[in-house]
Image (cartoon, rainbow, N blue to C red):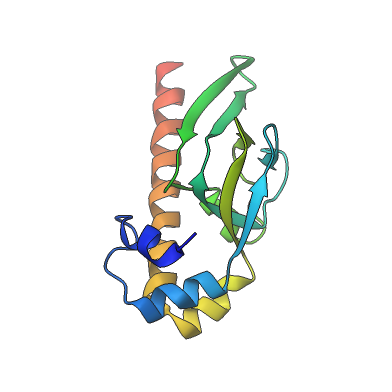
Length: 149
């Protein structure tokens, strides 16, 4: 698969040059994951984020207070998930499981320092995505807690 055209079609990556995108791709590995593959578990610290090329992934979390599983999102091709795994010593707050065979780019946490050097604008985009995810998680948790009052 030609990754440059694929990345250019994604809103998160459309403004970057070919060289910047190639620097990002150089930090990644492409894998095929079988149906049922567990990308992350909310009990563990993750070490990679993923850009889904094909397939679907279910992201969910267990609410220990309500004692039920909550579906957070269904990830489709072109979406990034487990972005918070790029933050060292942070437990990923969700579980992500392949609903079908998936192809994804795996971007490891240790690739971020290299990306900051080779393509600082793309590294900044990933950091921005982390900030948005943290803000969304905080907002959702705050809403859940307020609903319980």
